[in-house]
Length: 128
Image (cartoon, rainbow, N blue to C red; front, side, top):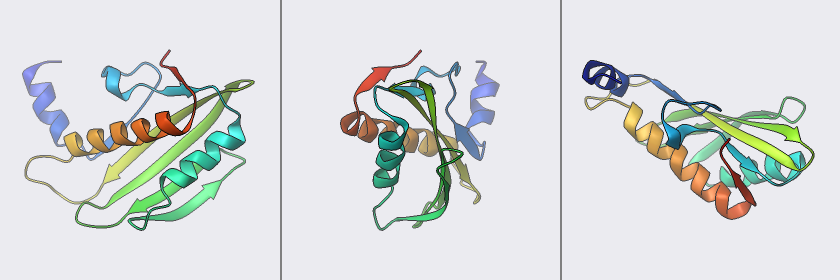
């Protein structure tokens, strides 16, 4: 990515993971577990007081959370079964306020911390 591309990226208000992301730290994580266990683990991950569950749909495998505090984020966590006992988890964060240094780096760090916690809770298979 060019210099100007990185500068503009800092000021993006959305950060999400995907299977083939340009940034390897934001690639989808896969876990050797059932859909139900992964779905519950994501719910436990955001059970702290700073998070408020806004919506959830087990049929669609999605959770919606609002992070309260000085840096409020809207978080969508998606859980998808790839194969039996292989489940993928993706995150999308949105930040609505303006930030002088740009919100993207802090959103990226949030996603990385979510994956670190999930990697401790579930058997981690890696990235594809």
